[in-house]
Image (tube, rainbow, N blue to C red; front, top):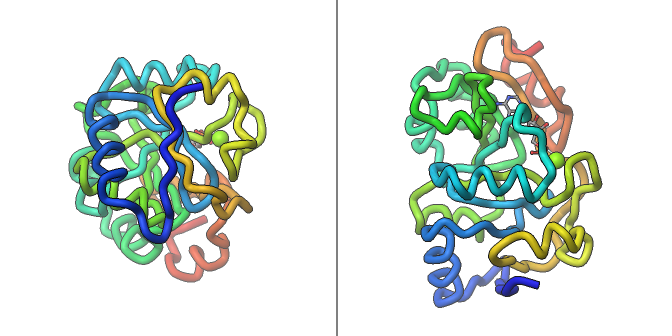
Amino acid sequence: MPHIIKIDQQNPDKDTLDIISKLISKGKTFIYPTETFYGIGALYNDETSVVKIFDIKGRDLINPLPLIIPEISFLQKISADISTNALKLAAQFWPGPLTLVFKADDNLSHTITAGTGTVACRHSGLNVINIILKRINSSITSTSANISGRKNASNISKIDKKILDSVDFIIDAGNTNGGLPSTIIDVSREPFKILRKGAIDSSLLVDYCSCIT
Ligand code: AMP
Ligand code: MG
């Protein structure tokens, strides 16, 4: 089993945050908590680690990987074409469990986009992860910590042993909220389309933005 680093979600220890940030910046793969479930992370621009995520999950290379970003302004590094309505949605519902699919910047890894020309991304509502992302000033993959097609995990003990053994380290922050995964909306063209119903009620989103179908 790889090294498990325990962290308090409410009151994260500074030295522990330093250790975690250094490991991520070096290109390590890891399990980490989000406000919904545990995810598997790798630096978004470290191609070797990104490819490893597909191996770890047994994920088909035609299935793109979502990202989480440190703040809304980071969007300019991954997409060159974001509509005003898409930005409004992000500003209203981030940080939180809303994944938005944007047109991807040409420079973004084609492994992440899986050749779709789009990238799914969100600003997580879990404070401890945002602190880490701000420290590394980068984005990480945010796919769920399960073998493709299996159940999501809201606690380290619920993660498949094969997944736990395949990453470089594990961030254990106890229980996450579980429930529904993030809601996914394609905002790469209007009208926006709900791709997956999830933690943010679709009717709230449709009420806020008339360009969602
Ligand atoms: P997971 O399977 O845990 O990685 O969940 C992420 C979800 O986001 C999956 O349903 C993916 O198909 C979806 N997703 C990731 N990237 C994209 C994208 N570029 N366009 C549309 N859906 C995406
Ligand atoms: Mg999943």
